[in-house]
Amino acid sequence: MKTIQSCRWLSLATMLVCASYAYADDKPVAIQGAQCASPPVLHCPASQCETALMINQGPVVEMKTRRPYFLDYPCDLKPGEKVTFVLSLHGGGSYGNWQRHYLPLMDYKEKYRLVIATPNSPIRAWSEVDDAYLQNIVDFVTAQIGKDNIKAFWLVGHSQGGATSNRIVRTDYFKTRVDGFLSLSGGRIGGSPGRADFTKSVRPEGAPTAAMPAGLARPAATGVARPVTLPDGDFSHIFSIGRREVDEKGLPETSEWATKYGCGVRSAAREVTDTNPGYIYDGSRIGEMRPAWGLLPAGGTAQMFAFPNCKDGRVVADVARLEKGHTEGYEPNITEELIKLMLTAKGGKIQSGVQ
Image 1 (cartoon, rainbow, N blue to C red):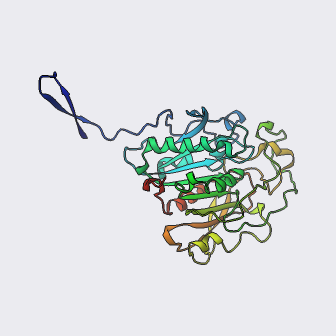
Image 2 (cartoon, one colour):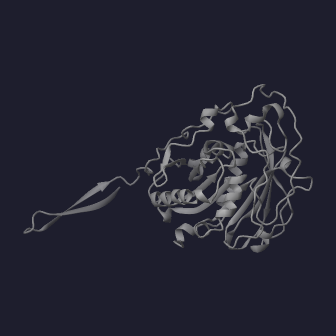
Image 3 (cartoon, rainbow, N blue to C red):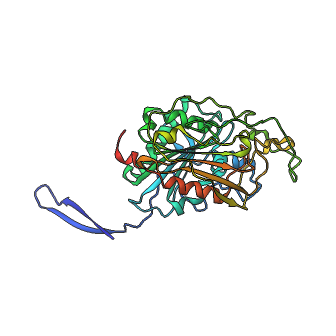
């Protein structure tokens, strides 16, 4: 319990009277306009998620632009508790709820004290016209949680959402706030791998005969415009990609971003395996699925490569998802390992008040 003091004048001519009141200090934080739920709202089942659910744009409204988004946070969040804040951007042709399930950070919000905002582009592709909307979301969450309670702020982006993260992290607004950038097949800072052949197609065994509605169709090419120079800001960087998306050379063994922070030689691969599949895949291409683009959900193994001993507490790492393409959702164990890796990195930009 905590105590507060309330004072009032009995009248202009009389003395000031004060009283002390006790109140509970363990009441969970409630973010305005964002009802908390565990399991999270509009959550897909383990398989066969309905299209109407996947394309939902979220129950929270960004009040300046009147655009919807998702905001997931621990339902037992205490006042003054430290959290990691994530802004997660969907890829081109996608939706916020698809992104929530592609990398299901929301499933770990209580365990790892995560606050995850997942916005939507109305045209399903990000551009500069969306920047104010994204900034407004960050400002709102920062005000609601309290900047001193945000121990780290990460950008996460899939495909064109990753390319957009690469762009906005160079802007004055985000480069003074972002502590880390997790790119999910959205371009690697410090040297990108070669691209695989996306024209080869197969029909996976057990695939449904009917495609999902065309509303989930995604662009045929993953090539997105990316800056060729390194950003001038400071942040940790994790790059994760399906092994089938890249050519036979695989991920580069060196990184200009790792060199920037004086990191050591890339470590040997640490493998993480999960027999459980992810939630999501591209159901619009059932009749002719392309391995590089992505097949049906299945368990899998990821190889995690770290560049050790980076200065200033930065994390630089690569992740290769074996036998995966561009659109298979992340498995639970691999999602959790990415979260753990993010949490080891230096944070505190928002706390520092450098705006």
